[in-house]
Length: 323
Image (spheres, rainbow, N blue to C red):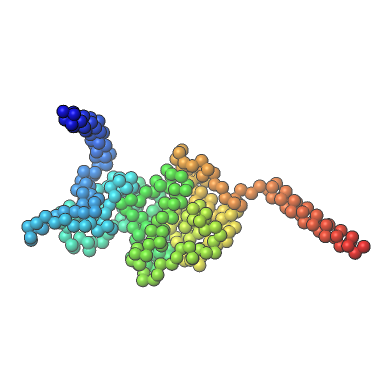
């Protein structure tokens, strides 16, 4: 009798849980469907490309087959619906023939779309100056060395890229997000060698001249030192060869710091990060960047007085010693 009672109690808890949580889950699903126009259509793709495995019926052997999904073809649906292209249908960028499954092998040979196919010459995106970004990119070492093999997607994953990461988070998050884009290739030999047979250089060894490496890597982005500044775009794309990289401390640690035109551009243009950002990052704290003329003069006077005191002491020691 006691066991039956315990069983009924457990079933009661299960029923209550279902009644309590199921409406919420339905509401979330409905919200996703209503918020994103193509969510339902995209789910047909994501039911395979959003998982590690997929199933298909092999008519040749009349059997249901379960296969591993190529990890490079897996799309994280949570990331996708937070990314820039979340309101797009998969077939906006991929051939409509992909709606047929299994996919034809010939589809893999079709050329992939690039950013300018959509963003070029469109007034909707005029404020981002995509034409200038494209021009800068083609002047960069990435394009000049690798030509058409280096595309936008090498750095900007179309299924997860978020430009909002630069404006809605903390400054530290912006730095980490942008640096991870560079490191996704320069710290990953498998991706690096898609374009070259050379050995991927060790980032730490290549920057062994840089004092306090860890602090620099946490506080500035790679592009601060490795690109040409362009005031018309928010993120520079003209990546320079390593011999042209910034290596003089004063170029950043001064009142006319390069960072004011790059990393701190949002603050200079009156733009701000979200209100819940780290308060310590609201105002840039850069050694040498906030000099005060009076303090500079006072420190020079103190130094000269100390130097003069040492000189007088030495002279008096010599005089009294000679006597």
